[in-house]
Length: 293
Image 1: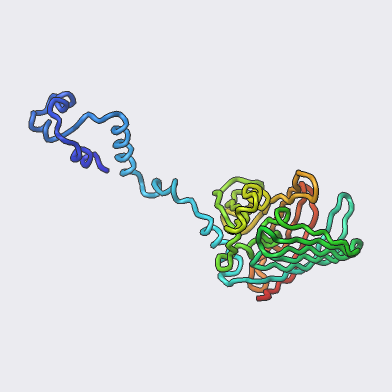
Image 2 (image 1 turned 90 degrees about the vertical axis):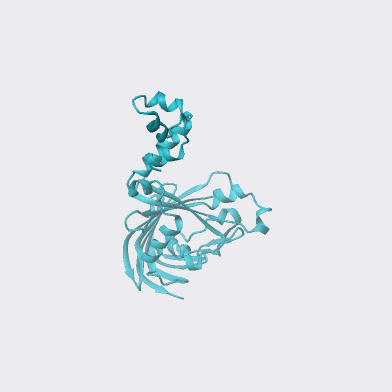
């Protein structure tokens, strides 16, 4: 609103005009049609007058923060150039750290857009370790088995983190995004990995399940935070908490992604690290990629 428009909206006020413009004739004073506005109205008019003269870019700065879908769309375009990846297989070498001990071998990983995955490690000393998780959902099941045949099963809240930890991009493709997966854009933040787009994800229970679960507890235990490089929109890190099998304290997990390469038409991190409670647990070097659509 311009100052002239502000004056035009005001009715004629007689004596009040003479208080502010005594040097003008009565006709000119009446033409001004100025009124004495209450302080809060005057402040509003001044703000409108000022905004009207701000550059367009200045007005847009406060409202142009990208939405979650926009940021994830850029990540998706970089990942597969618009091609929907339903299932993908990665393979390479792995080093496993357990305290001061280390073990190495090969690794084979399978990730699906529905959130299901399988990780198979074949280690020189430890033998074979297989980790699996089912489709995203409140009642999903996760298993971990070793070469001695012991199977550790977890389900429900303790297995509710919705993203595939070694390749979260595959879970966040818009064309196949699970209705059980919710995302929220937290803006650009300065992090240990530089300036990053920050996106949080969590499981959304369906209407039939909402009445039977603690929604607040589900959101907390299924929450994962993804950090995307602000320039290239590539995943740099993923953090989440996995509840232990007993007790109340959780295990803090941090996944780091680096050395991106285009292999078989998809852009993937060829170096992936998994840290547990601040200590390096797994270091992966990916050398082969196959799309299993």
